[in-house]
Length: 446
Image (cartoon, rainbow, N blue to C red; front, side, top):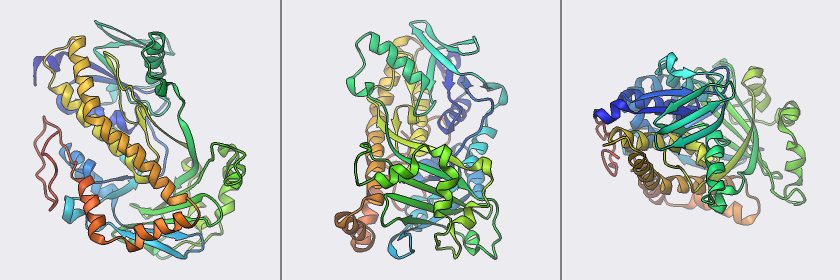
């Protein structure tokens, strides 16, 4: 560890998964930091999160792999069906461990969050710290909070989500200088709304699927509506669920009037929305309502889903990561994975700093953007295309799903997946995790 690394101080704004994983990496690199969280407690909402070999190798390097295996189930398959359970197609995922060293894993999002939180010293997380402004100069950066407190550091990382206050203030200052690209001045695009949760522990005699080694995703598509229901067993004999619908950007469109009328203001209509699907059958031999009704009310969330790729990720001493600079739809499970890979890249660059001047930080941030922007943009586009693949209607959409799920040769599917999963980078300052898969990673370190 260099003297430069020992001397720098980092402020992380946002105590979500991206902010926590970066904090764990900085802890391992012995870089001084604090986390500012606007909420009164450090917690998360959501149902499940899926991780693949691109991020699991990193979590193993951080010493989290034994705990991940306790809270997660390996993903066995993805089954697509209509809302009457008529079969559309399936994808097998059990080859993951042999090819890449890891199965894909699915877990309750709160379980992963609690695991990450447990690895960070409590004194380094400050609650009730809502950021109102960010001021930077050549001597450092100051973060001002709503309670009147200020926090000064060498650099500031905005890990505060899709509606990032750090990004807002950064862009405000760039706008005043006429340095903000026009595309970054456009709002996020709201595309989907959903209601989601994780059931309580279920009786294996009534719900035998919860005891299977592999979690099999059951995705039910409505024939008449651009909506879907996602179901997947997770550890603890629980089943995660998500009921979502696409929101047409033009309310007058006849294509989606039914969807928009149903969703309206989601929080006010959550109960009615769930009653609307409670009698639908599932592949588990029960009704959708049988799963939803066991979910504690405080674990049911209404969520707006947006997407946007931002061109500007940093200024001189302020940098963004995760949803703050590339908000993806969650269909392909890419949001958390991309945030972890952002954090890995940034942590490596900070660890390797040769100086602590503004020029040094700006150069590191430029390298960070150069290394991560292409993958992040692909993730945004990929999640959008997957969303369209799932909910689109008509003969073309029907044939696209049939070709992809039933007619495409297995070797072609594996080739595409192999190419994606080769990107399994590691931290440069921790012992390396040997590559166990048949499909070797592009490089041992990034």
